[in-house]
Image 1 (cartoon, one colour):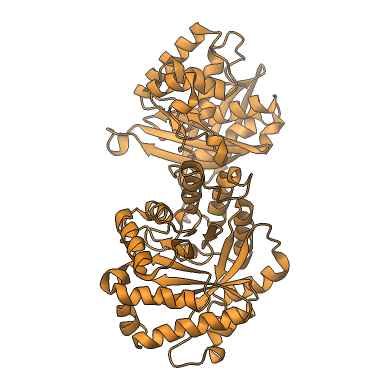
Image 2 (cartoon, one colour; image 1 turned 90 degrees about the vertical axis):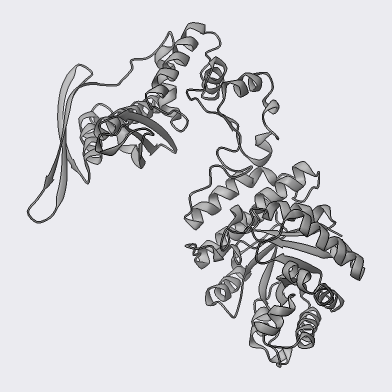
Amino acid sequence: MTFQVYDTTLRDGAQREGLTYSVVDKLAVARLLDDLGVGFIEGGWPGAVPKDTEFFRRARTELELRHAVLVAFGATRKAGLAVEDDPQVRGLLDAETPAVALVAKADLRHVERALRTTAEENLAMIRDTVAYLVAQGRRVFVDGEHFYDGYRYDPAYTAVVAETALAAGAERFVLCDTNGGMLPSQVTAAITDLTARTGIAPERLGMHAQNDTACAVANTIAAVEAGVRHVQGTANGYGERPGNADLFAIVANLQLKLGMPVLPEGCMEQMVRVSHAIAEIANIAPDTHQAYVGAAAFAHKAGLHASAIKVDPLLYNHVDPSVVGNDMRILVTEMAGRASVELKSRELGLDLAGHPDALSKVTSRIKELEAGGWSFEAADASFELLVRSELPDAAPARPFALESYRVLVEHREDGAVVSEATVKIRVRGERVIATAEGNGPVNALDEALRVALARHYPELREFELADYKVRILEGSHGTGAVTRVLVETAGAGRDWTTVGVHPNVVEASWHALVDALTYGLDRARV
């Protein structure tokens, strides 16, 4: 049977705490998932959630899916109610999707205590609803809710639930680890026992894993190795509690580690882009340490690694980062050796291999600064400026020279707090004094510096402060602590990060701001 990749970001993933999708957001996420090449996109619960009902209505005319089939999610008919009279089942048909997913109780305890019905009626609810929807021309998937817990409690009944769903016409019966408490060996044992007990072909089974034991991806892979050919997950592992199985890790492991071509050709390279775009829509910062798609997934810090990578990148990368749309990065820290600095410089378009003296100076300077609390791991722009300053044809270090700056914070009688900064600089032979106000001392200093430079460098108007982070350095205490400041600046279609360190947070900010403007002006001239 064809392998099926089934995404439930828009339904199960949307249950993550603090995550809310608008209808427009859901349409955008669906398009991104289709770009990735998933086979099925579960859009939500029509009839039960008004937003989901609206999503399916708009999807009929606004979604042009190339790879995916849209799926409406719902439940089996209510106990004691004829399936054709159940309004929730009618809502599934009204969604007009080619496929439907039904959640059904697979744990006898839930049947008796949550549904408050009998074991026989639960089976009839499954049988009636599946058969009815199949007769209406729908492809049907049945999610066996609490399958694994139910199988441990009463394997005979849970096995009959699976048999009933498939006999009624369900395309796949999905084994749900709803509480997320399973381990890979337990998943394998349950699937092996179920298929032996019932004769169900494992290819007709699916896997849906929650991540409460941090084993959701591993449990899904274990299920596939046991013969399952339908996997469910969510983008970036979004979902309630600790989340769901991360769809990106699942498909990357299947395709790259097990050699199973589960995505259409050319789609896997979209993985990083899709991951980050969905994170932006969800208003959740991307997890930099996420497997495969995180910014740090192929980042190397130790000098020993860098020496080997210089010979062959795959010596320390488990796959070629480009196959998932990612890049290898070299982090320059106090652990860095000459190889790290050389590789990082080459990554930024600077060749230090032919300048051994400059390479030695940069390496020594990096170690010296890092010992004082500076960090260049996330500040590529500051690192690049440092490297350029040591090259034989180095340009002037700064586009201006500082004479002095002053920052005042005034708490006014009406309760307003206003910051004012004055900078005195020399730029292109001219002495310039500029004053500006801001909503804080750093903002005021940034504004004053821009005012002072604006006439000579009008391109500064394109730069804006995108992010500002302050970190108290380890080993420092109280209000006299040494601080590290990271400034992210955006402009001209790109962004860059600079760093500053000093016991005075304003001075640390000044160093980062000066680097930011210097780097931006330097790039603008390229």
